[in-house]
Image (cartoon, rainbow, N blue to C red; front, top):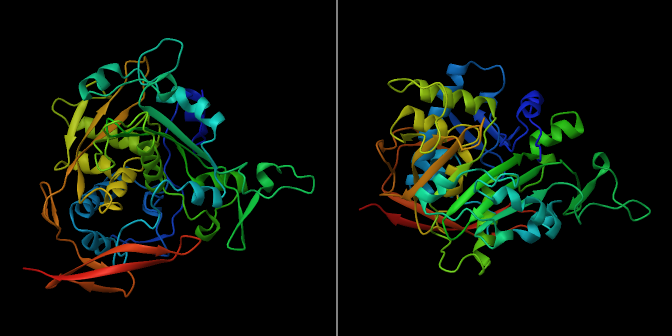
Length: 424
């Protein structure tokens, strides 16, 4: 069973299961007083926020997660321009990274889903209850959702993808043509030296069923801190590192595979799963959400578990949690490719049939409504913030929409096409 390191290594030793960890650093500058995020370069969205650092009060973490969840809902529901304004991203919130990213990920030092990795990870995309063969024991869940539990290696639609930020073709070899140890691995992008971070991402996709599974995430920032024994500066990390960008690449790849996508559509995203959660902050949020019920619950139940809609404080907190945010950014950053705004409508907390199962989260996706509206919230009433010019706007008589039409080689600079249309 594979292990991903976390800040709390004792938890991993105790449970020895797959898990999702939050990003450790960000090139987003958090403005605590304004509760806004001002971008520097291209923001890797779902990265760690200093406002949720270890040592912060549980109540404070809960409040911040509720705020983030509320803001994500507005960003998902609104137009691309409205989402960009809300997050201080200039003219567009669309990610500069699109498509399967095979070439870009290799350029940025990743060992990307080679055949040996596919075989090794395939059992993690077995969602049935098969004694002695791994799997997640989620047969009742998948039956209710009309999803096939079979992994791709056994002829099913569930494909596990993995990338590792080490031992890649881009790493410079030593004088004998051999790979150095991880501590001494470097690669170049646009003439600049970058150091390997030891990050790993395992993400499953069921393209036919419209599902994405976050199975094992060890971020570039947190992994680099362990490998380098110091905090990494944002500019030292690979440009492609956010879970939402990497999940989007794998979602694209799965739809290129005609053996598993006979009638699938890249716009038909229905579910985001987060599997076997040991992230401490998220688990505290789960316990608090369950304790708010009447009668209160101490732990998650087996399927169907407990549902929280996005009008509830608990639903917003779980969406805004360290392991939930990526799902919202996935939708908010790809409105054009997904055919318009899509929103997360509810989240379900549950456990698998395995004894001692850790919690799972399941986020449900629905088509969005009119620009600026969020289910149960109405029009976003927070301040509009221009993170480029540092000025506020209270709306206006026109809406700008934009899309990325050209990117620089390193992916950090983009050319956008803008359309200005009047409000009626």
